[in-house]
Image (cartoon, rainbow, N blue to C red):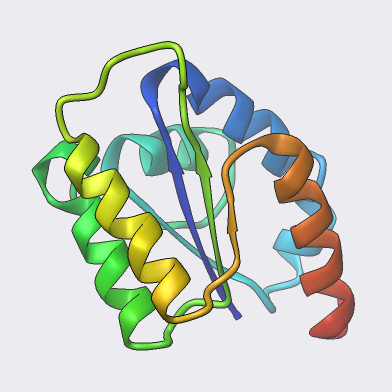
Length: 126
């Protein structure tokens, strides 16, 4: 099972904290993580294995959308910062649209991500 991770700059620490709560499940090896570049570097520094793509503004959001369109993702967790402006907002909207079109679960905050992650790990035998 592959899960994509993205976090706006103001939410990267929240992403690492979120993943820390699932460290045991993630270290079993049944879940592959893929992330945009900068988010991925924060996740790696916290001791998790993650495939790093391009930074979001440089095309990482689009790369994750392509994986979603190809049905290669079980879910997308995207911690968005609703209080800041983002120059690549069209890419963000495109990713969210692709998730909706292809029925890929998308969590945009820690509460929804926790519910989704717990359900996915139960479904896939973790």
